[in-house]
Image (cartoon, one colour):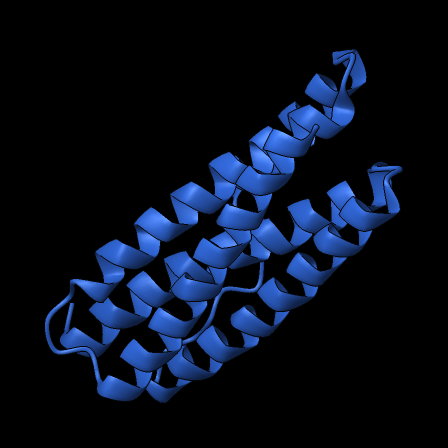
Length: 148
């Protein structure tokens, strides 16, 4: 596998995570009653949608094809979240815990990709910007968790 394919593969993994996160946030927004949380989850879904389009463009710049589907693990995670929420006494707490876990996993994945040598500066800028936004989101989720 040549360098553009290797980088595109890593970007596709990030894309897949963003597609999963977008779908999970939309699911959370539809199933939470608190208007503040509903708005927060909706904003995160839109943000991840935008991240996905940025990553798709970067992948195409490498002459590769971006993924268009969520992952099996992401689909399984949403099913688990749904079951957990059904049986949980506090759906808000459960949803926030899962959001924090997902955001932390995303931050870790971005950090790994950013360690790759030779990624062009414009892609590094995109990835750093996205990672920083996810960190802010993670901090907000943690803050919301302490408020409930």
